[in-house]
Image (cartoon, rainbow, N blue to C red; front, side):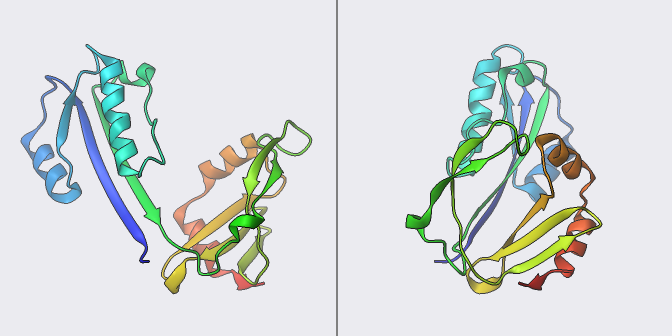
Length: 183
């Protein structure tokens, strides 16, 4: 099976909101996106249903709710993009080895949740970054043309993770990946 990569874009505009002809042209030509009129002001629930249905279609049902009525009620335009990727691991996880393991969304010592977790043993690209106080591991997909990189701050909490995400840049990710070695 080949990897599936699909990018979809959409522009949702308040009914009656005037759009520049150039915007409509370039939106369609470069992003394959037509502006869809939605009743943000008159019927936020309907606008939400239309946008969330688009998200569900674009992600094969993986993401169903990207916007809420509270956001839609005040909107005049929402521009959305979705990236859908489906691939097979180059070294598959054993489904029967999936176990419930503790997950601490707010850091160790706080409330935990049991979540289905996959694990495996092997040699993978890895780097322990003292500069960012984080670890990164790479898991490749079949054909080794794409990979998932997981970056975890050390001693992470929800707040620490949010701060980390705010300061992480594409250049930093590139540097981390370049320092990875098989371990």
